[in-house]
Amino acid sequence: MVGHGSGAAMRSHVDRFGRAAFTLVEMLVVIAIIAVLMALLLPAVQSVREAARRTQCGNQLRQLALGCLGHLQMREAFPQAGKDACYEAGAQQPSHRQCTVGPALGQGGCCGPATIDRVEWSWAFHILPWIEGQTIFDQPMDSTGNAVVNRTPIPIMYCPTRRAPVAYNGRARTDYAGCIGHTDGRRESPPTAGVPPFAGLTGLIIRTGAGEVRDGHVPDGLSNTIMLGEKQINPQDFANPFDENETYAATGWADTEVRRRGDQPPEPDSRHPSLITTNINANSARFGSSHADVCGCAFGDGSVRWVRFGVEQAVFQRACRREDRESFSVDDL
Image (cartoon, rainbow, N blue to C red; front, side, top):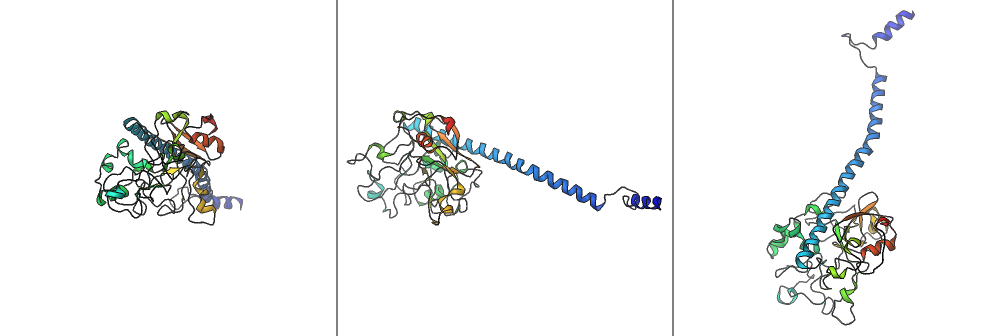
């Protein structure tokens, strides 16, 4: 009886051609082992991929920063953030000539037909010649040319961790913003009576018309002053969120698509105000990112550093101001 049982067990491992075969239990064990190995390896694979995307994001920030520095070298001033051309009289002087000798701009210079020039468009548009975007920059100043500019994505303006470099809702966007300092400044521009220099703006990338920031206006040093950074946006609505509905090129000043303040530390996209408050139209003026725990920032010397979401507010604000003469350690960012 014992010998007969052993023979039956032996035959259960052999198919009809005499070849060894797995039992069902053995097969299940193998599958379970493979599943465990995949579960262990998947986070590592994802981590490697995110590290590669973060490196690419940092390289893109560096290219944008070098574009700004190219503008500084050629034009002897940092590129400006842009401006709404046709505010009411006295609000943002000098008013652009498009408002008086060109077609009427009912929605302001950010959205109207720029047929005379594009001086009030954003820093992101004005650095195109230094980031291999000369063809887009040279589009004719008419409705057709403006449409080409506004719908053509610039790949290095999209963080690869966040989204693909395509037009959203027919508009080219940017995931990076200029640092205007620690305040929105005054709506009026100097030399209007009572308006401080640069309209109170303390960053490197400020509103068009408020003044031109040059090397000599940065006593804190370019290597200690944030120029550009990743911006916080709503990760659940890339198409037409309330604070991301304009193109990178012609946003004006009222909207914050191409500018951010440094009065608050950066936060992840998951903490966007429209997601954590009851106001679905809440906008964000913070820097931030889709990365796990950091936000990429480019400094005025072209260097790129990763700023922690938990950075102390006072330290981050000092890094965003060009003129406060307050020291800080970059290791604290």
